Figure 1 (cartoon, helix red, strand yellow):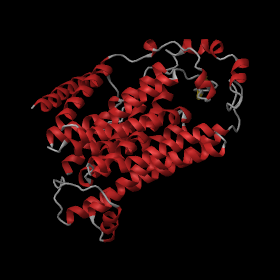
Figure 2 (cartoon, chains in turn purple, blue):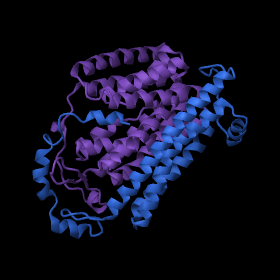
Figure 3 (cartoon, chains in turn red, yellow):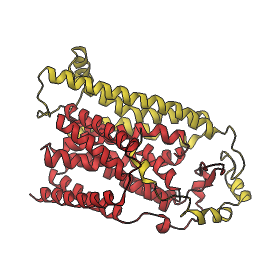
Figure 4 (cartoon, helix red, strand yellow):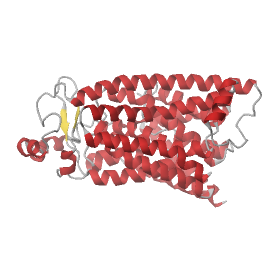
Length: 272
Length: 171
């Protein structure tokens, strides 16, 4: 248990350094190295996702970055996805969970290896639905620059992808920011900061929906989930505050390789 | 506390998104926009003083701080619960099958200061935080007569509460 706690701290620190949640590291650590059954590992991870999201929300709301309307609009579809993903995880053979998790890690590594910037952004055609719902937001300007108003577009596409992200979150116990942030920034036209902040809020709600399924099925073992949630939270806040400035391309590159190696091991476990 | 996401905003977002800003006037003509959405809080320009939005954000901030305190309390409870469980000689890394949690079990466990029950309570507190946040947002939307968003919040609440029932069928 102490090992799980320490591993979770490491996962939180590492995740914060490279801009991921702890779940993608915690689940393989628990299953491959500590021999925990994957459903308990995912149950523990989903709880830790709620903890980090809730802890980070205050800062994002204070900074006025989170778009509360966009969040609320996307939450029903991510939450339904989260419940379905959680149910699916209970029905599938654990092998499939290993395979899915390994694939998700590989795709995450792929996404990380590409430079993510606004080049891939889709053009901004006005979306009548977004206007009707008053989804536009503002990002505070820096140093005397007035706040900038942005419009939100492609609301329906966003809702569909959010549903898929919810399924992934519930099935594998990860937050799914790697899907939600690009969806909001590149497809829905939100500034990256606003997308990140809004994603953080939504992740807590999605994870709570999945956590309900895991808890009521008995897949949340308090003596695993407790230390893991505490560890990831401590690690993530430490990683975010103390080491946050030292982001380097090298660390990212090493992390991508590690992700790929572990993804392979997860897939192999699935075939074993 | 800093979220994982915060570090993901490198390479100033002002730069690459510059062109978007310049097209904004075309995309959002003041006239038609106001015409299309009269109740939208704040126009496309000008100070958005004391709009429902800023009240919402203010209350949300208070709540977010409250909820962050909830996370800290939960964290403390986890530590206490784990220590208690270890001192009672519970097998670490729970190899036993944790049964689906029932409230009676939890209440009994808390009454006898059972370590696992304390951790369970802490985890439930953690899960409750986003649920309460959605409920609070729903109330705020309803008070600002924002019917659609109030209903959305209600829908999310129903899903969240329903999730606690769904898992029992798959067990």
